[in-house]
Length: 84
Image (cartoon, rainbow, N blue to C red; front, side, top):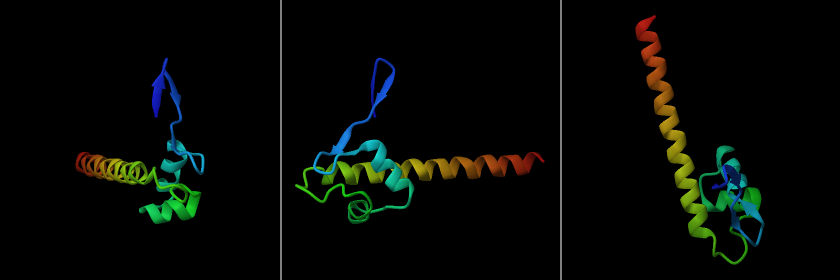
């Protein structure tokens, strides 16, 4: 996402399929873990291929963010149980 004047602007990741970063993140959140799965679910990456690196980067970034959130949630739950 690009912030301009405090407003989030959706970046188009795949011009051929008109897929934004927001849509791509939603597809990954729904379970897509590879370029192939992204292509099957929303069409991104099925055209010229110029977006393949950006899609792979976004998938890796989303998965890393989800893993960090999972670890933080587990740590908070463990701490909560320890104080109970």
